[in-house]
Image (tube, rainbow, N blue to C red; front, side, top):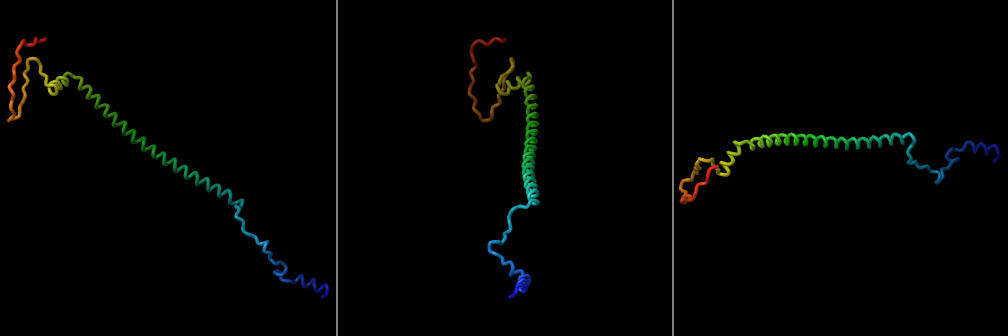
Length: 139
């Protein structure tokens, strides 16, 4: 073959014959993030973190508000109880209450009064002895 024919043959060969793929030159897709996707990924991660932290703080806030309400209710109940105890203390310090308690609980009587006990029907009474001796002097 002469030289001009060889040049024509080389120039008109099909593309597949000119460049046969080598097994070493096969390209694989890289798993690296592109420069345009990285900022958006960081932004999404920051938004996710903020959402979770705000949710936790909101949960704490609602719990604290419930605690405040229950404590306020307890304070009101204690104020009412305190007022009732103050009124009872004032009533206990009166002479009428002291006399009533002495009569009902202790069985005491004033000078010159006679104590009368009611006895249920069918109850045997023991005979009472009248104390002998000098009568106590009235103060």
